[in-house]
Length: 306
Image 1 (tube, one colour):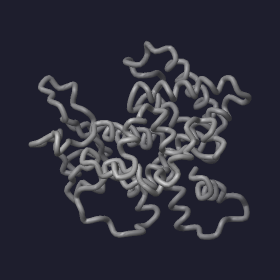
Image 2 (image 1 turned 180 degrees about the vertical axis):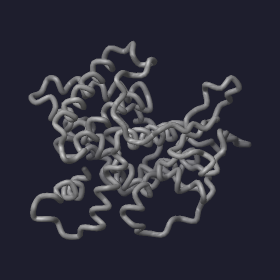
Image 3 (image 1 turned 60 degrees about the vertical axis):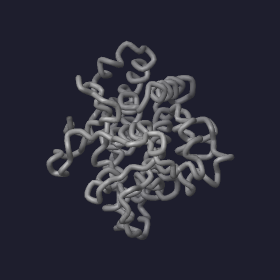
């Protein structure tokens, strides 16, 4: 069934979902993030930038695409206890994951249109209804694959966290190997979409989650989750992918779809999508940086992607 929930930015829930509460490492990490969120609320900063970084961590613990990804985020959060200023360290980790979301949104084909309304269209959308599901692509990874940082410490040294680094840490190394180079055009990395739903899918307006809760569930069947009531998008309640020859004509890779869904949920619930849209709108409206420091967030984004 299609699912219409409130996916607008909101504070972290007071506790983890019941299905995750038996994991002590996750609980400790989540409690650390919640404490930081309360501390930020008490400070009442002028910008919600740090709050966004904080909530990205919390919502990643809830909506990470896999248990491996969830455990990796929890480990990073707990490791912050061993270094100096805990709050500053947690915010730094959250900022790295924010950069990860930004790079997916801005540099990869599937996410690039997310903020077109703020940035203005820089090109003509393709008229083809089949596009890469998760284009890890030449621009970002291809030319620098050999020198991409492979862990958080190295990524921090370079001042950014690459898409490659995060997805590998989340357990997607095999997927990355498959999609590297010519593999990006594999059929299981392509999904045919009609023009009216192509942009909303790329824009994270809706995403697909496995329909495993249904008693009549069948493989490759997905529920549609959306920012808006599905009737506004004229979407069905569920979609099922089928192939007459799965060996020669493979269906869309479920791992690509789960990454897309997780990024959509975290980006919207944490406020990262809204925050970045506001920053980029400022870029369109402000071609000269203010001398009083009020353009600091815009400058930071232009220089570092955050």
